[in-house]
Image (cartoon, rainbow, N blue to C red):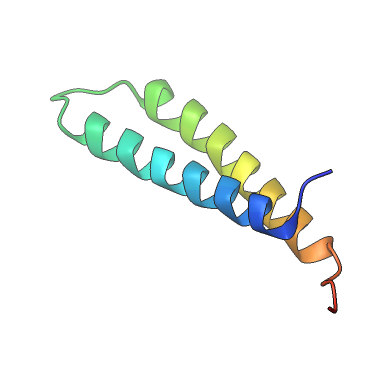
Length: 62
């Protein structure tokens, strides 16, 4: 079972990876639209799932 912190780390990694992907493709002169849309959409879905999982977890009171 993941902790709250691991959900935040995974979310951060997804967002960094998506940003790097978009920056790398922006340097291509003619990037096909599908090459931009599919990975960005899948990464966005994964990031949203991590955020949802993070929000649904209860905080531990120590």
